[in-house]
Image (cartoon, rainbow, N blue to C red; front, side, top):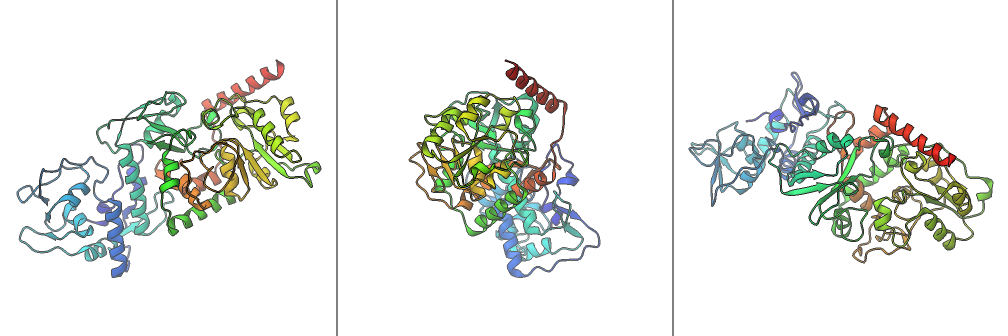
Length: 496
């Protein structure tokens, strides 16, 4: 029988040392762990359900036409090519014949398939096979992100995450619109396990026009430590097969998750814990940034509304803003809706850094709002306001995470589900009513992909939240050059 180390092998990510990515390692002297029948059965079911084990990241073999017997020996049946994904064959075979210890036989037994040797002897069943593997001495299950010991269920779950990402990537054969400075990062997000290129094209739509059928790539909602406009590589992206989350003209993968998805209790409990971790760490899209500010005495006794500025030529504004396409237009609409409120305008950080365009001018902002919170920490503002009014800004989603009421004037991805007051034209397709943690599960767990900045491994969102909570922005020649470029632009604007 295969060892646990062989069964739970990690994909050979080309940019990561295999010792770093291992989820199960040899540990001489480690005692066996007791595993009862119920847990053994659950472990076997989890492994088979995740379709991991063996070389699961490899390309699938072309299966025989018609019924076949799967075997580890071509003389007794059909045998897949070395290095291929074994699971399609395990699931499709009429029978499995394998000698004790073979990879095919072990995985088939864990999947609940009856396995016989060439002499007709029946293999141990799924329970006994799982016990032999997961209760074995001299092995340790290891969290590759921390190096600490963990449980085999957690190892299987991570392998399953890696499998799902690799499977999705196999359809992509070409990529367009990726800026040179982030190509290596995107290549890692899209690694397909060495499978042949698929038929689909993936594009970054702000740099390459998406054609019908193209998959679209965009930054995720927990992106990086520092601004993307400073050329910091993304630690999270979304790869959308149907549209993209900021374009309400058609359904995106995220919208379809929210409209049709099922969110069970374990998933929503996980989403609640993730939300609490983000709020406790005071994180937003670009990590924790900005200077804490206090609202002035003049705000007391009035409804305090935060109006986050956006980059006016951003596709989110152009496609999802409805009839409003400027920050000045948004501020005017909010003032009309709440004439007696205390309005706090927070310019977009890319605009403040001089790296993107987006009015209003400082004088106009001071005229339209009661306060312009330049360089302010988003968290400190959300702690003090009564509501957020926004066009399509991610700040609206970040406010929802913190229990702050949100009014939308455009059609952001989080509008239309019963969680916001919507003054914009939200697609009529959005008829489902969602709880907050269902929105969190879809937007932060199921939809994006994440990359651990320390190990370089694809990771769950909880790992990235931990990294962002503990890190400070790193500096490169590119980020320093972009910052000086932004300062120079701001100086020219002030001089002009």
